[in-house]
Amino acid sequence: MEIIVALDVDNIFQAEAFVDLLKEKVKIFKIGSKLFTSEGPNTIEMINKKGCNVFLDLKYCDIPSVISSAVKIAGEKNVFAVSVHISGGKEMLEKCVCLKNRPLLWGISVLTSLDENNLKEIGVFRKIDEQVETLAKIAKEVGLDGVVCSPREIGIVKKIGGLQIIVPGIRLTEETDDQKRTLSPKKAKEKGADYIVVGRPIIQAENPLTIVETILKECSPQF
Image (tube, rainbow, N blue to C red):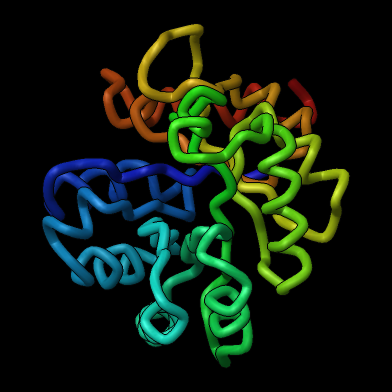
């Protein structure tokens, strides 16, 4: 299992400081909407120059031609992986899958900030487990490389098979915030996560490197 550190910071200078601090232990960094809106593609170039990989987590969802073009550009910029909403539909996903020299395609299932009441508000009346299963099956059918799901649904995606499992909503304590479906790094690994995405518990820590080292130690086979 690998750690992806979410660089949910205000600017490229803060992002670069975290990459420099953590790059000996972490090889993949996530650029989300906040940092990308602030600094744009320069953040991708900066991380690549440091010898690390970029997970561009912009959760693409639009008409097929627009999203396939965006994914193509991401590949040209040496992005390691991008996120696409599985709910964007098969045609959108298939147009991305067939691209040459593309990044890994990781499909968003149900955001970790949502619960079943939130799904009902947008007209989805399945249970979260059922919705994740439905979307993960689509991801496998069209040939996505992985599925992004909360730690609570790892087993569902693992049972479908053939998909990398990328897990946000990782928390080190039982704290409450806008992530509603969370687990610890160790439990996520035990359930079968291939990648865990960790943001606030690392970047808001007094000593981020110590937190990374603690996670790695707890998740190592010898621990």
